[in-house]
Length: 149
Image (cartoon, rainbow, N blue to C red):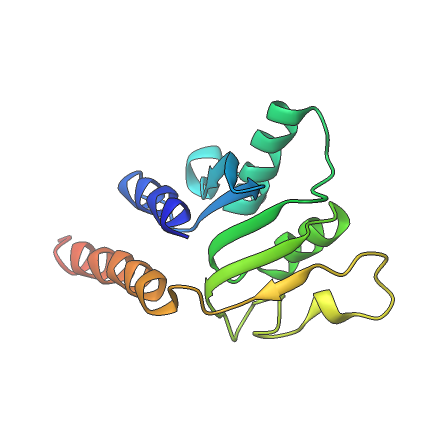
């Protein structure tokens, strides 16, 4: 999760919402991703999609079988669906998103009986630290917006 937090910090430094992700197989980080929605001007610039693109380039495969995905914030519905369809072994995230999380925060897409694939979900890993990183970013954004005349 620390590596995902590093990715989130890089996203924040670039003015993006600080969400970072890493794909791990057999204890080795194989790919990394971070939010770039604003810089790419694309709705699929979420950290998980960027991670998936990097992983596909690195491995030549779209399947995540055997991969643990670490994300600083609970994946949204779109990202959760992608991780399920890509057959992630495990989705591990920091803090939950009760408004839009797809791994149990708002809905639990992973538990849908109709899915062909059911990744294990682990929540709350470094939850306080990942949430603090997220909140600090928005605190700074609000502070900058107050200072704009």
